[in-house]
Image 1 (cartoon, rainbow over the protein chains, first blue to last red):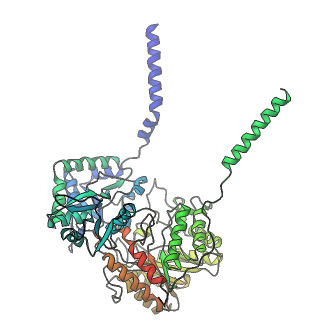
Image 2: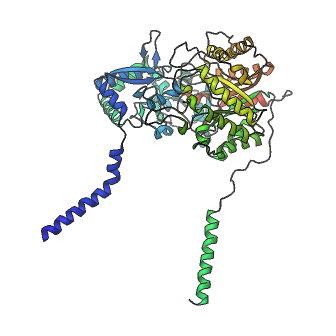
Image 3: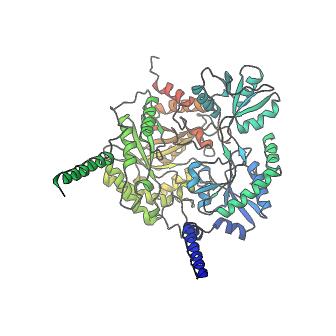
Length: 260
Length: 371
């Protein structure tokens, strides 16, 4: 009798848990097949869509050879997955749609994470930060409370500086004709700080040993995009990216390409 | 039940009905068009391509258009998506389109309506074949024609210009397929016929070709000069009233001379030559996209200062060209920042603060002769 009650209880418990988990079970069963991952598993290559117009990330030589940080990253990523990277040239407008129609498995093209795209596509963990940074003097760097900021006229840094100036009384914007000139303005004392984008900062700061990044003002993370149904491919890419971050591969590639 | 109790119940129900009506009754519009405005400008050909397609907030639509007027631009080119308007076949949702067109007219602006993007029901079943929003099969040309008819008919007194499709010489804009000028002309024929049935006075603009040097067989697209000739070969002459062109300077200054082997601002003169060679010289040209990009990363961009100088020169250059009806700069603003070099085409930030280029263009267009 007691055993029968226990059995009933167990059956009811299993049924209740099953009912509770039904939506999750249905979601797993209804999950679309990861076509991109299936293609990668069958082929020797991973096809990366790329718009080779943005150095030091994506370039195309006169003999059809691809080069740049993204190209090195994709090659290494593919190698660690036991594959070879193949590059598919796409117009900037079609970098996402080529994933939808299966002309490439992933897009790597200095691609900033765009929240608007998340309804159809997914991104890897970021591998580069390209947002605006405040640069000041060593050893007592000025923060954004600095009374003057040098920026290139009309640039994204100019727009970010105007935004700051609307919120911080007394902040003076000083205009220069390039990001490098904005840094020179700090060195020669004309301005307390400079606002430049993350790529320019990584490229130019080695030439200005007295200056350093003191604040990340805006964030523009670059990542690899895949079609939203490519969960397995995304997981594989993220695992290898994490590995490459841990062993310093990404850092080394970034430094190498920013020096060029 | 006694009478007072019944009265009490009726009173309660009555109050509940009044409460529900008060809560559920549709509110009036929060943003009204306001008094009609006029554009004050010294260059009636100046315009801008707005990008309000994804902009849902009426106040932001209105603010964009106010700022366009204040800049001294009389024309706007705006994109109206068939996919969004006729989401279900034969069921049209005009709410957003009404907002844009009515606010534009209230600001005294002339609207050039660009039509395109294919609804899901007019594309292959994605379970059989994934396609992009620019993909259209000949089987659905008549459906697009029906949409064109509905659009032109609805805005008969408000919109005088439409553009059929966008940059069909690019694979991306032709559904990621090999481009096909003859197929585009077939689509154009249907659209032209249906537009004229709805309003014989409508001006149908064709082309809006992308300036590109892509060679024959390229998976990305086809040279605009070759593509336009193919359009003529396929009988395009009788199915459009004016040519829409895109004039991008890329790395070159505004006055760089036209050359078939280069993409520059004045490449549009070569398209105009082709029109004349095909006996179409009497038709006007509308520059529906134009500009320079000032991204520090993109390898086809100039500096912000060069961008401003080139843009001001271009606006000045079109003034005495009797074959050019309008010049619309690409692009006024985006609803959201793209965080790519695309943001370096805009005149405003995504939160509608003017960039230096907006201030300079405004200064040029609104400066009176005696200032």
